[in-house]
Image 1 (cartoon, rainbow, N blue to C red):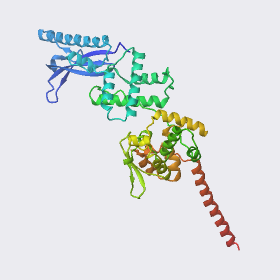
Image 2 (image 1 turned 180 degrees about the vertical axis):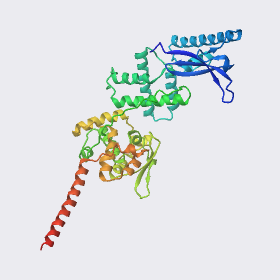
Image 3 (image 1 turned 45 degrees about the vertical axis):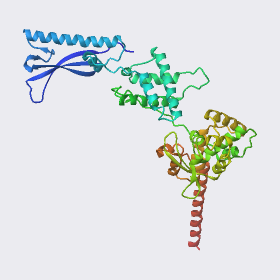
Image 4 (image 1 turned 90 degrees about the vertical axis):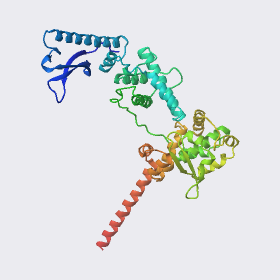
Length: 421
């Protein structure tokens, strides 16, 4: 942390717009080219002020008395500067001014802000989302301990370098347990959450200048995995001797045909299934993550699975469509299912949502606007991540094009033949 700064104090006289003969004396505090001005509330005639030296003109008693006062102000401002250095707090013109005036400059801390955010948001954000914020909190704590040998940090000390150092720390952090090191997008997600916390601090008035103003998040656009029609059919038609694998397979396939996320599928209740405008059964629900309403027509395969589980004892007991199983266990069992079915892809429940968006809907000609609405996306740009055109559809479209071109060529040949007959 920097302990020495370019620091200076200059006294200036500011005149008003109407009266140019008199002005008010200000102390200008400069730290690293950043300025703050402090009114001394002392009026003086322009003719009595030495603008070059920043003192009162003359050697009379009044001039000497006033210049002595200015030196006292200079000494007190310098002492405030040194006090900030000794206490290892952020040295800024604003903090020097506040300390001189006896104000309580911003002494809120980072962990105080993090705690305030998590406590106020824990009943607003989805459980999975607030859990991620707690993970970000752990990384901040590790960073403070490693970088500063501290458990907390004043908000006024957080700057652009703090953010970049935090980013470097996360990129180089090697977990001691079974977890994988963070990739680029993992680091960016933690910084995105950190930025939201800092934005809250600014709205609360705890942070004067947002250190994220010049910082840009850089996410890597990853290809979204999904199952092909053949892979999905393999899972659907596979016979599993173990009941838990059959149940997990059915919940996963249900996700492939509805686009529901894990939390929305596992919490889906019978009261959220009803007839739609077309006389067919629909899902009418709210996404837990975004609180947006979703209306999903049930495809035959999804309806079959729904009917299969609506009287399951474990489903009836909790008044939900499916028996309760944690996301962690479900993804663990999906790995077993992938191995049994000979599927090399990393099978997770979220892959079902990707499969619905690509293999089930977009590749079969469903407009992206409709898919976006079914998925409960707030913006169609989010849906565009899924909007990859499958090779099979490209092949079909090119076959149609070949046929069109071939027909045109046959027509032209026939026309030429008739002309020359």
